[in-house]
Length: 128
Image (cartoon, rainbow, N blue to C red):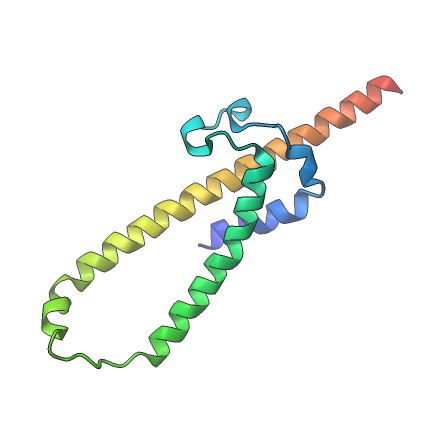
């Protein structure tokens, strides 16, 4: 979780001109085309940026719920207790995979943006 939030913060700090990502597709950076579809890096940037508050809000609401929850349905408690660990493990593994994928996408986008800036800088140096 921390790696994802850190990568997203770094992306937000480094990507000063998101419009430079328009028309640049993940295939150009060696990313898996199946994960990106037909979206350019600008659209991916917007998506990754919009997901961050959802993740942060989700964490806050989970924390709030865990402090306020009471066991109101004691009759089904025995039934659900038997598979709680399995269900939790499944969801934690899924969340971990999603966050790993988001972190990879965020870092790749940030790297590609830096490359674009370097290309612009080199072009400016050669034209001077």
